[in-house]
Amino acid sequence: MRYFDEIIALLNEIQATQHEAMERAAQVIANAIAADHLVYVFGATHAGILAQELFYRAGGLVPVNPVLPPGLVTDVRPATLTSRLERMPGLGTEIVAESPIEAGDVLIVHSVSGRNATAVEFALGAQQRGAFVIALTSVGYSSAVQPRQPGTPRLFEMADLVLDNRAPTGDALIAIPGMAQKVGPSSTVTGAAILNAIVVRVSELLMERTGDPPVFMSANLDGGDAFNQRWLAHYKGRLTYL
Image 1 (cartoon, one colour):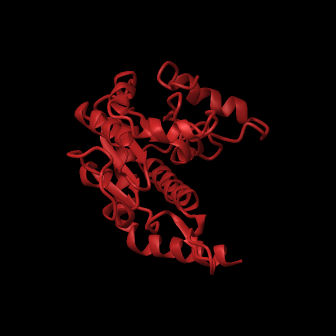
Image 2 (spheres, helix red, strand yellow; image 1 turned 90 degrees about the vertical axis):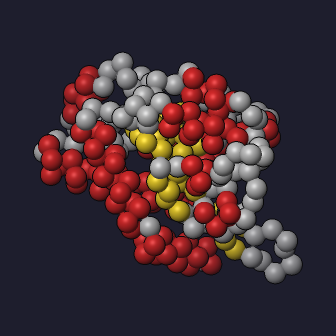
Image 3 (tube, helix red, strand yellow; image 1 turned 135 degrees about the vertical axis):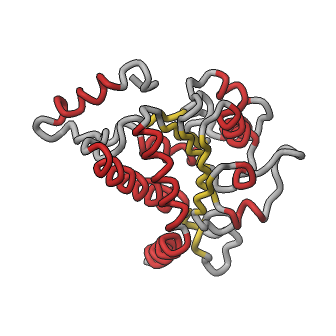
């Protein structure tokens, strides 16, 4: 299977090139959680799958708020509406206006091309509130395209920290002879690996500092519900999905 070969090679490339950025991201997130702040995660359409991966997740961090605005998730019909909305100037500003994100929080924004208005506006708005913005993007892909909205930055140009998923331009990995379009998108696999590696490192750092990292246990294990309830009670009123 060629896809396995290509995605493993890409993961190895990311591990070699993004180690320092991932470590810094883990340190920033651990500091925020230790200070009782929250982590927000946003992405439009398929990029938002990673926001869903990180919240209320067995083995994942508790203080994670996904940002899943109506119209920008993959269950929208027609799905083509999501492409129009993620490009719409002003929408990201409205989304951040309705978000409780505040100074001291961390925002992870996932956008492979980093060019659409909504992701950039949301990141800029959170940054203006004092949140630390981490971009998960492809610097190579983004550098090869122009911002959708002239005069605005691409995501990698304004974030406080960039995690480069090294996706090729267009995201897909595999060229098939006779086909104009490559197949096999990379960014969901690599993005989930990057973010879960950071979750593990954050948990290690918090274990060293506090001895009690806020991590969910699987609710399908005996005792899981009781274990999780303590953390849900601690963050009650601040986890937006409850």
